[in-house]
Image (cartoon, rainbow, N blue to C red; front, side):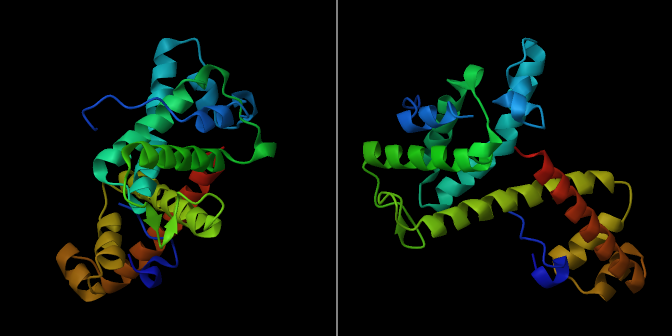
Length: 232
């Protein structure tokens, strides 16, 4: 996606059959630092709900929201497809095992920071157990704790932002599903087709194409802000 066309919005992103190994101990220990009652969105509160159906929906929401980030980050770190699914399973098992007593305290950092640490712990543990080749991102090995922290954090933040924009795109696409506005935006701002070509294909004016781009870009920014405000 072109930053110029998107008005400087970030770019959108994109099981193994064997039983996963037990979660790495550091991830489980980190989780004990965090209290659902202190979060604004109630995803953690709903995970702890005594209502089975409500709890199940919350776990599914948790899975859909965070697994793509964990998986994408692991792949970007050089973990292969099968091993990245094992990383996902280890992070989830580590969190689920303490879900009933998970305490989230904003004063100790945002949940995204906890999740990054848990994912890195799982990658390191998987790399050691499976004797994977050196796992790197931009030349920074996760087998060297304390090195390349900035690069790793930037890689995690980039994956998080790609997924956030992807979620925002789906919401906005649904909001505009009965009009040509989103299709005009998609073809012009994302696919890179010329305004004249898109206007002819959709039987719109060039001015309408520009307006569609502005309208959808603003809508995406609003939804991204909303998603970010919902995140603990």
